[in-house]
Length: 238
Length: 244
Ligand code: SF4
Ligand code: SF4
Image (tube, rainbow over all chains, first blue to last red; front, side):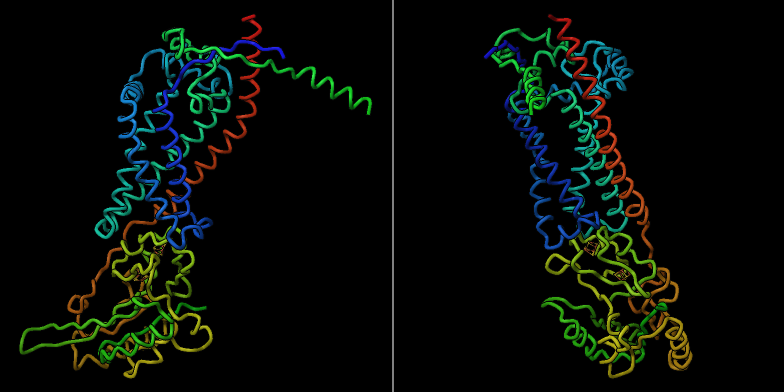
C-alpha cells in the first residue's frame, strides 16, 4: 500500500480541548433545555421539572469553565482574552475579504497569525455573551421572588438575546469547522500543515518546526480514481 | 362564547370558607394547593371599626400579565377567564413574579391558580365556589349581566356603606371577577390601579425574533456550505498541484 508523509501542527493543548468540549457540552444542554422552557412546541419536555434541573447542572459547568481554563492552561486563557480584543490593520484587510472566506476561499486573504480577525470577533462576542448569559441567568435563578416585573423583564430580555447571539455564533463556528476541515484541531489537538498554511501562515512560521509542535504521520494515499473506474467497469459488464 | 365574569359581593361574604373547600374538593386539588383564600380585613378606628372578608383568588384580568409572560402558553385566555394547561407548565415561575395580585404559586414544580370552572359553565352548571356559597355572595354569568347586577347591588348598599363601589371594571383591562366593595379598594387591601407591566415586547417580540434569527442562520449556512465546501476543495487541489 502506498503511503505518504503528512505534517500536522499542534493547535490546541489538552487542557484547551477539555475546556472547549465541557463548555460546548454545557452550552448545548443549556440551549435545548432553555428552548424547552420558552418555546411552546418543546414545552412538553419541560413539564415535570427534569429539564429545569438539567439546565441548572449545565449552568454550573458553563459558569465554571473560565475558572477551569485558568486552572488547566492559564496561558491559553490569557492569549484568548488578549487576542480577542486587540485588532490591527491586517485584521481590517482580512475582514474586507470575509465574504470570499465565507464561501470557501482563502487565497485572497493576507497571511494570518494564530487567530484571524473573524475568530477574534467570534471570541470577543462569545466572551461578552458569556457574561451577559451568566449574569442574567444568575439573576433569574437567585433573584426569584425579588426581581419584580421590570427586573424579570430585563433579565429575561438579556438572557434570551445573549443566548440567541451565542447560538448564532455557534452555528457559524460549526459551519467554518466543517468547511475548512478544522475538527481535528479540537479532537486530536493537531491541524494539517496544509490547513495551517492556508489559514494561519504567520503562526505556522512562528512555531518551532519540531515535535511536539509539528509531527509527521504516515498516511495511506487514497486512490479514489481507480476505485471509481473499477466500479464503472463492473457496471458496464453487468 | 360571550365574555364571562364572576361576581363577588363582599357585603354578603360571611367568611365561612365553604367556597375554599368546595373548590379544593371539586377541582381535586393536590395537598397544599388552594385556589381560593379568604382574607379578613379590618378598617376604621376604634370604636368605629368595620370589617370584611376578601376572597383572594385569580382575578382573570383581560390584560393578564401572567399570560403575557408565560413562555410555554400554559396560561391562556378564553371567554374572559385565564385558563391553565397544566401539562404545558414548565414551572419557570415567571407568572408568579409578574401577577400584580400575587395570585399564582408554584406547587410541586408547576403553577397553581384558579383555572376557572369553564368546563362546568359550558355544561350549563355553576362553578364549585358559586354553587356552594350559602350567602349568595358569588355569581357567574356574562360580563354584562354581572356588571348590571353589581351596579344594582352597589346602589342598594349606598345607605349602609356610602363608599360602596364596583371593583374590576377597568383594572388590568377589566377583570373577569367583578367585586362589590363596601369600602374603597385600598381599605380592603386591593390596589386601586394595579400596574400592567410592560412585558409584551419580550414574548411577542424578542423571543420570536431570536428564534427566527437562529433559524435563518442555520438555513443560510446550510445552503452556503455546499458552495463553500466545493470551492475550498478546489482551492486545496490547486495549492497541492502548485506545491508539487
Ligand atoms: S390575577 Fe394574576 S394570575 Fe389572575 S389573570 Fe390576573 S395576572 Fe394572571
Ligand atoms: S410557571 Fe408555568 S404557567 Fe407560570 S409562566 Fe412559567 S410556564 Fe407559564
